[in-house]
Every structure is written in C-alpha cells, then in structure tokens.
Image (cartoon, rainbow, N blue to C red):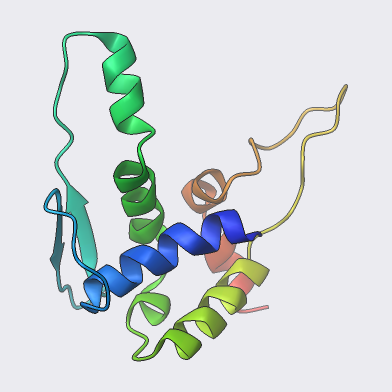
Length: 125
C-alpha cells in the first residue's frame, strides 16, 4: 500500500502523541484492547452534498483508517517504530486490484479488507 494511506495514519498517530497540534474535532481515548482510539463527531447537514464533503474530509477518513489499524501500530513510541509497524501491517493486506470483466472480492481498499478480516488472517502466516 502506498504513501496515500501512510500519511493520514501517521498524522493522526502524531496528533495522538502530541507531536502535532490536535484538531478540535478529533478526540482520543486509550483502550486496553485496541490501543488508542480516535473519535470524530460528524455533524449532520441538510444537504446531501455537504454530508458527502464531511464524510470525505481528511479528519473523517484519517480517523476511520486509524480506527482500523491494530494496537501494535498505534502503541509505538517513536515515529521510526510506527513507520516500521505500519509497513509490516500493510504487508498483511492483499493487493488484488479489480480486473475489468472479472468479479472482485471488494474495491481493494484498506477499509474493505479490514471489514473482511483479511489483515488479521494474514499476520500469522
């Protein structure tokens, strides 16, 4: 997986470690089982297009990704170890882009694979 996924995850990781200023809309809380979690309250707008913009914003998508990575990534003490743990985690995610004319198991995104549990099955292999 690419820098496009690493960057938002590392920004949220840095916010959680107070290495970057936190966005007021993102709240962090520690949990025993999942490591730190981030929560972003998504306001509701009357216009559907505004809701789409809110749901596709950096703070919404980055928090969704941060929620899905395992605790061993979120609990890293340094940026170097966080990058290494993130690289290891990304190697557990299948890369099966859809091919025209064939059915695909999903859209080949991190959130899609996490919903199917693929990453956790591949970690032990």
